[in-house]
Image (cartoon, rainbow, N blue to C red; front, top):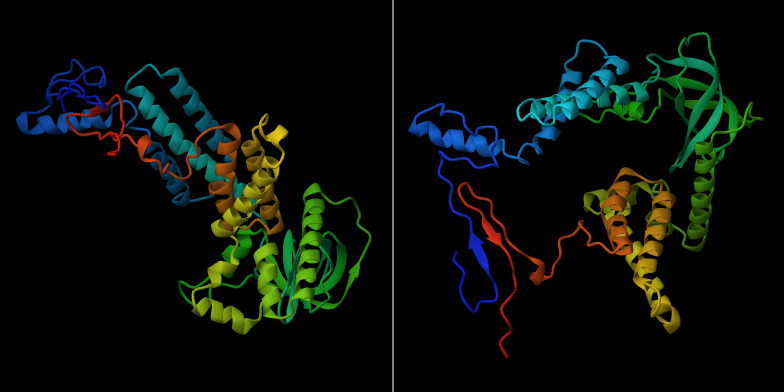
Length: 415
């Protein structure tokens, strides 16, 4: 492409490089003899391009994942301290050798692999907890109620064990999930005592089926069971943790909204309305739940990007419209940024109110949170590409040439 007089857009082309010549972009191969004849010249050229500045960065996640794979093939459980020390030492060595063209990328790759190994080792040690391997009857449990679930026929609670009394148990699980009678589940944050029968987490019912034990393990639950007799609310031996206080406040708020909605709208309609606001889907009847799954509409009940975008968008436009009605404030203050911050606050509250499930967290980080931060800071959002055609400038990286665009404008519209 050659420059043309009188044209609005000016573009120039870098001269193509021959396979035998390497500029300053490839310092590792400069001044070195060829390692092959003519058929291998292209291989040498492609190798030089692959190790050019910035081309090895996509290999960092590959190296990180390689360290994770090494953890899974280890014969025994690694220790956190040596793995972390080795990763830190390689990071420092890479910083020291950053001026060396060959040692630096090798050390960075080794540091990334060791960082992946150390990360999964630390994560494994963080979530490790005792798991019950056999059934145990007549077990006395005292602890804090962390989660309460209302189901169609019974309720279910997750108890963080403070004290466990049994003759057949050596290692007490940290958390147990217990089924109780309908309407007898104590509130979140209560300290209770009860008699239970505990069972080991169930294995998959068939090969390749859903693994209940694995799911419960990553939730920190080491046993399941059912309550025997009355559940007593006792005086706690110490004050609850800050996380438990937060969970109790959020759960009481969700329960209040859920009861109010279901009292005003009885039946499955109220259960669906409550599920879209509070995230509580336990009150939905079995036939309706099955019909939603058969019709492929069950994802509508899971709070995700659509729900987050609706909440953040409605709050943004309402707050901006209200602020625009005040001329003195709208002409002197950036009301768009204020509306974006209000939308971000509303999306954060909706995230906490709905239970902060994985799909909700992903949607919060991707959609309204990213857009609101971009609007409040005055930067263009990187979540969604810009749809304005004047902002698109194409740049294709080829093997031998790269088009450099200095100015990119659309031709004037025909009148």
